[in-house]
Every structure is written in C-alpha cells, then in structure tokens.
Length: 205
Length: 377
Image 1 (cartoon, one colour):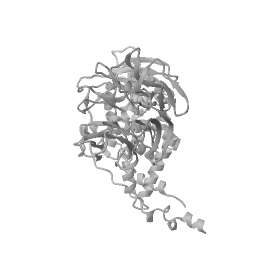
Image 2 (tube, chains in turn cyan, red; image 1 turned 180 degrees about the vertical axis):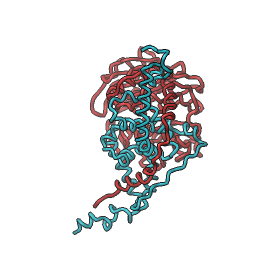
Image 3 (spheres, each protein chain N blue to C red; image 1 turned 90 degrees about the vertical axis):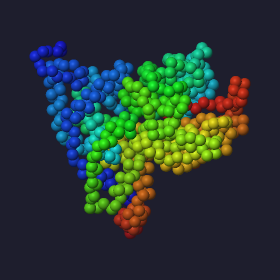
Image 4 (cartoon, each protein chain N blue to C red; image 1 turned 60 degrees about the vertical axis):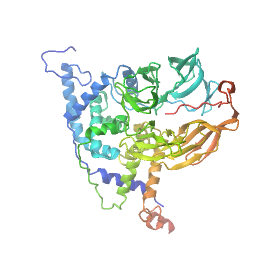
C-alpha cells in the first residue's frame, strides 16, 4: 500500500516505511508487547541474571533480547511460542561476542545494586557454593545448568534452545553436579554420609 | 542412597534469582534498542538475508522485510578425520576425495562440505567442496594460505592477496570482503568471533602480534588490548590465549589464558606458544612450536591452567585438532614412522592410524607425515 498523507507519520517496525497499514500494525504490536512485557519481563530478567551473574549485565542482555523479540514479533505466528522464543533469543544473545567485555565499558560508570539472595528456611549453606560454581562455568555450560535446573527444561528442550546435542547437555550437567558434590561438605551431603540419608536408612532396615 | 545434589542446585539458583520481581524496561526502551539494531542490520548487506531466511523457515516463522536473530539450527557438519593423497578419511569410516585441487595444505569441514587451501592449475587457491568432495568454487590466495573456521563449522575466514579479510559462508558459498583499513602489516587470521552471520567478525593478528577485530559491517578495531598477542579464542569467546614474551630460558615462551570479559589473566606459565581450546571451552591444548617444531603436547584445564595430561618424547607432532570435548587427534612422528594418536584429558592414548612411513622426502628434504589433520575452530 502506498504512503498516504492523511495518516500521521508512523514507521513500520519491519520495513521502516511509513504506511497506514503500518500504523495499525505497530499499534497492535505495541499493545501486545506491552502486555507481554508486564507479564513475562521479571522471569526473563531472572534468567538473564543467572546467566550473567551481574544485575546490570542482565538488564543489558534483556534489553537487547527484547528488542530483537520486538523486531520479530509479527513473524511468530504462534503466540503461545513467544515465551520459548524469547528465552531462545536471550540465551543465544548471551553467547554472542557482542556481549563481551569491550561492550561492558559502555556502562562502567553505572551502578546497579545486586539483589540479596532469598535465603530459604531450609537453606543449608550451599547456596553460595552453587552461585560460585555456576558463575565459574563456561558460558554455554552455565546456560545448560540454568535452563535445566532453574527453567526446569528437559534435556531435549535444553539441547534445542542451545543448538547442541542431548549428550552434551547430559555431560555438562553431570560435570556441574560432580563439581558441586566436590564442594559440598560431607556433613551436608547425604550422598557422602549415609547416616543422613533416609533412603539409605530405609535400605538398611 | 539418594543424591540431593540436583535439588541443592535448584534451590541455590532459586535463592539467588527469585527475589528479582522487577520489570525494569519500558516499551520505549525496547523500541529504542530495536531501532538501533535495525539500522545495524541494514548495513550488514543483503547476503545475510538469504541465510537468515533459510534459518527462519525450519522454525515455522514467517518472512518479513527485516532480518530476525534466530538461533540457527545446527547443520550436519562433516565429521573430522585426516587427509592423505587428496582423500579425506573420515572418523566414521567413509572416504571423500577432494576434486579439482592439488597440493592441499589445509582443510576443514565446512557446513555439509569442505574448505581447503592448495593449488589449482598452479595457482594458490582456497576451495569450497560439497559433501562428495566435488569442487564448487575457488578464490585466489597467495602463499601458504591460512584459514580459520568458526566453532559451528559453518564459516571460514582468511586474508586475500589484496590484504582484505574475507568471510566464507559455507551454506551459500559466498564470501564477504571485509575492510583492511587499519590493519597492521601481514595480518593473519586468528579466529572467527561472535555468532555468524549476524554478529561476528574476524580476529586477525599482524606481524607484531597486535590483534584486531574486523566485524561484519564494521571496520577494524583493537581486539582485547588487555591480552598480549592473542593466539586463540575459546568457542564461546569468554577466554583468550595470548603470549607475554620469551621465557627466562630464552627458548620457550610465557603465555596463558585471559578472561575476555574482564581482561584479567586466568593463568600464565612459561612453556608454550600455541593454544587450541576444546569445543566446549573447558580445556586447552598447548604446544611449543619453534625450531624443530612441537614434540610434546599438554592438555590443561582452560580456566586454571592445571595440567591434565602430557604427551612427551615423540620426535615431532606438527599438528593436532580437537575431535570432541575431551580428545585431541595428534599427528605424531616416532623414528621414521607416523601415526595419528587420539589422546584424552583423562590420559588415554589410542592409535587411530599408522604407523606409516613419511612421504615427500624429495620435496621437503625430509619425510613428512602422510596425514593432514583438519584446521580446528
């Protein structure tokens, strides 16, 4: 459709052309995205934080990912797939070179307070060890752990998001768990102390 | 006995993140960033669009006028192996002859086919072959061409005789010329960084060891200036290996691994000057290549530098390549015979081919390996 003079100037997010169709489409898209942001942004921020380990980097990652989601919004025909699509963009954006150190300098003077860990009543002191372990993993391995143990994706779903094999997902998880076992004091780990494991006691009977 | 480690991991992650309930970004924030991204994509050239379109279709997404960043499905990448007498012997047992090219000096799987460097009708070329080895395209090159491939095995990069870095897309068979302005003398490719085709660039080092990044759609810029003489980049770009200078013995080199994000050194030692990260970035294989060439190879934890396994006391091991996350295939000379040995970070060693006598003694003045391993990412 050709440009019209009667309609207010509006830029189609996909084409950059000003069209009346674009005006309606953009308004619809903006309304949908606004509603979706209100509902889903905190969850994505949490995932971004676990991936980056830094609140400011998480917001930076989130902003780029949401922008890319916005640009693709009209192409995702299945609205029910938006959440998974957004997660996929977020995780893959995290492994992109353009989220590396030389980009971080852009925000070097900003300070964003880090969130306080939510200590649950049953926390036995390993939360800090988990955090240290996860943040010490290579990026892709960290993404595997976050998707599997925070997002609760299956191995196949995790492999699909990251574009890797299920075997790689299994091996990355196995390594992370093994590393955590090594760091967990024996008196806190039932797997190392049968006397603390009710299943073990049951078996002994 | 029940292992609650998974439960502890889940609880640890939840305790750290579940307190974040904010929605810090507005629609205006998102649209502002979207406009910036759209401008950058338009400058990246039309060649990208075809590949992105090919990526979008399998995901069930429609076509628009813009290009969306969607993680590409992993193509079938040709399995690694070795080349001898212009024939690839792949690890799955199949053989593929690279047609139309002679004196192959380097090769690598690229997408579903192969990229190679050699000669055609006497001229130095880089060639692209399909899965059956049939020649598809060649591009001119000068001298013993070095190329690098990205960690997904879908793109290759090298430097043209004009000095321009080029990025080859294995799927389309098209090259993208990148600007050479600002590069030092005699740049050579070190790695492909980022995620091609949308956001990536070629890392090059000049004769003095200064490293540059030439991003697609951009111009050369200093690359990781905190890291001296960048030699390798881990597949996820989080770690970089570099050289500090000569070792106290004036024979070996001091170098190590740095965090690409912080620029902080993770570890340094004074043994080696060649580094190759494993596909998952967890390990790094290091050798010292000067004089008579490498005769030992060390497998280390990439993050700590802790030595996991060392292969020593061979006469020559001119090349090696990671074949999976934990194993390196090494071209080994012992006496007059050559073998391909797969060594693991767990200390295992397994001969996959050979021993076989060396070849081309008249041309090189000594018998060289009959095997040629692929160029790794």
